[in-house]
Length: 449
Ligand code: ASP
Image 1 (tube, helix red, strand yellow):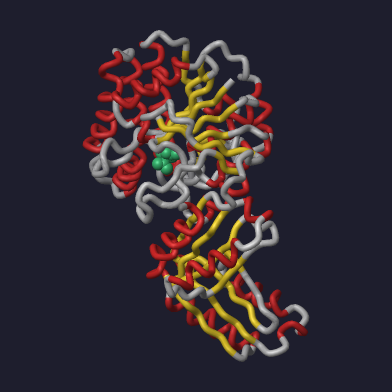
Image 2 (image 1 turned 180 degrees about the horizontal axis):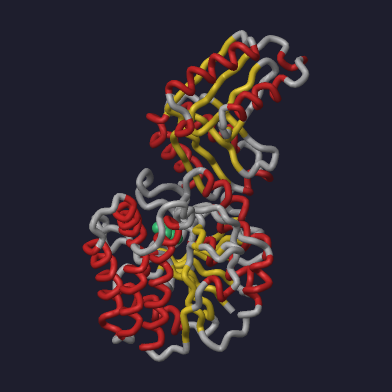
């Protein structure tokens, strides 16, 4: 039994929904269908979720909302039109959109989430209607009825473990269940969404709950590329990748599959496959606990920008008990989250996401470190990018680091920092952002051509 999740681009138009219908019809094992809100039909288009954000702001600013509601409704209406979907479903969607504008706004922590979640919720109703109109035994199910209970953290909900037991009860459902992705309900019955792109997480939770044999994540590419196609012309696509590799890649900017969606499938040991709605015959990329094919030591090269690095050096730092703790306490006092902290004998570097900083905060932070730590040298560097070479195969192989650094040296790329965890799943280089593309290219051609 399989859980199939379809992303926004797979549900953006009636033509795309026809493909989804055919995919579901083609395999009777596809019993649970998790849907996103309708996405973009072309690069200039606007996702329904983004239209709902506009609606939210219009409500907040007490502006006219009828035209946005109509625009959103038209998206659903256009998708449903060729399928002769039951009129009452579309009426219900329109009513639901209008009722959002009647909700209390003041002191309502869940208003934003409720508005956004309606994108998926209404789409699940519509897709279930399409399936029924096309002769499938299917029905919409609300996450509350399903038992998808989450923590009360708006826009950042986390699943509560008891949900898995509740969802398991639906395992033998006679009908195909069409489930809206992206949100769940708190124990108090409020809507809370996952972070953006979170329908992947819903799919993973349902797959773990019903103990599916496979979680199929349908998107608009033939699988996960080994490097960003914006940097490499026609990069190879991966046939298989392990959870650990995927975690590293997702962390460093691979966005095909939401990084939080890995955990539920990993814990429940359910294989995931990323497939293309537009080319369902293609085998896609499988995410598994263990990779069968170790031909290539490296599976992918990822990169993510927007980092800053604080460098602190102090002679005999290694003998000072509690040195790092004091540095971390300063970060904590400033509410800063750090990503990496490689260290030498007399120095440490702290790498953090630059979007947490602003010039005033930075000045104060540096002053505080200088005062409390009394370093010999202290500086902060901005505009850094992290480039990560990922592959479990590197564990058993000599020379991956040497080849990577040689490749960067050939292109005269200065490495600000290197980090390789003892797991040896990845090697991370911090470089100046202007050399990102060169770094990705030289590393890619070192390991893939
Ligand atoms: N519709 C939501 C978003 O755009 C969730 C998703 O598509 O997975 O973020």
